[in-house]
Image (cartoon, rainbow, N blue to C red; front, side):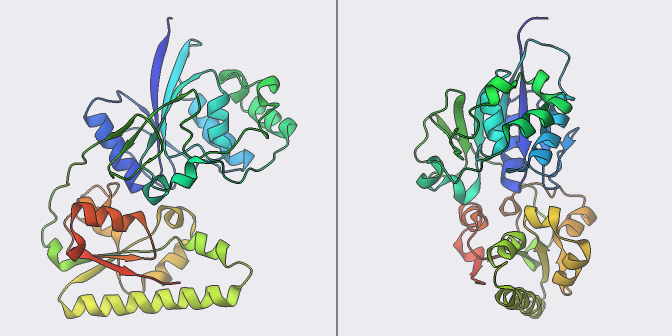
Length: 327
């Protein structure tokens, strides 16, 4: 078999899902191998992973194991990979692998708008022997040609979320004019607004903060964290009552990281009488993967700083947006 190129798309959030769908619809990527993290699903066949692994060798190997076992049996195959960022172990390994031909970034919210994040971030040192053993055990080292020699300098490699200087960097796709400000070959694409939801003027959506991240930020001060979470529950109850006074219903949308990692019992406690975003979409036979601002809700309540605010402003206007700072 001759040289072939396969598009690989990794999505883990509404914005990466929305852009992935648009790239597929426009023909910029064709018949992609899709990997969904943090419970992000695709409209056709896809591979499910927990996440990109960050610095965890086992989780990163789980991602790569599922990737390589889904590849066609062709030693000449090369990969064009579309993903949110290359900041952690997965990104380093993809840059090192000769099987990966090109890397593209797909809009990653407020993060992509910060010029500082095209500079190296905090690195994490790993055992090269342990990493090589794990990659070999899963058959990843052989398939992606990541031998011990290639891995020797992985700890001195810089960790860069948006690495425009790497020779494999081939471009980025954004929907915001201020995304990827220091990168070259950034293409702005237009997302299609999704079908109107009947009666959606009387449906408000509340987008919750990343609770898992909050917990890690305040792990040294559990009393403060407890107060923040209590405040979140009171906020939800208040917003729910306010929506009801306007004859509207309130949908709660968890951050993808929380949707994937929080216990179901905890999520039910947080709902506090409001309605689940995912259940609403299931009942109405709608696709919950898209960025919420692409739908026509009556109000968008965004708790804490989030790219969600940016997208609501862009697609629905400032008058539809309610910003609330929790901490």
